[in-house]
Image 1: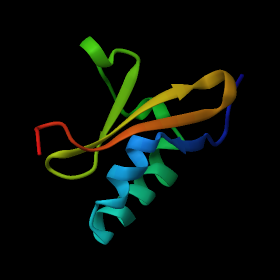
Image 2 (image 1 turned 30 degrees about the vertical axis):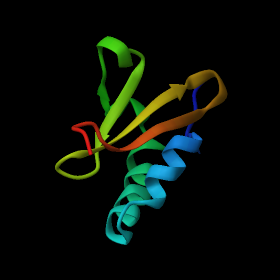
Image 3 (image 1 turned 90 degrees about the horizontal axis):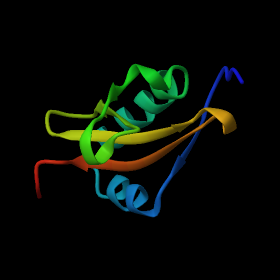
Length: 87
């Protein structure tokens, strides 16, 4: 199945992390999700190891958006939206 635009969904963890972002980073996140991830989700970096099957897009110097693509249902599940370098 070919999807023109993917729907974006968030885990509860991702929603909590997004709520803690600054307004500037929240706007950047919306822009990345609408204009990059929803259009061509495979454009993100394919992750390996424990996160195999997930993709990542840089939000800021240390923050990343981590997501999984569900091609059969035309949606992207955002699982993380913050740093992976510790708190």
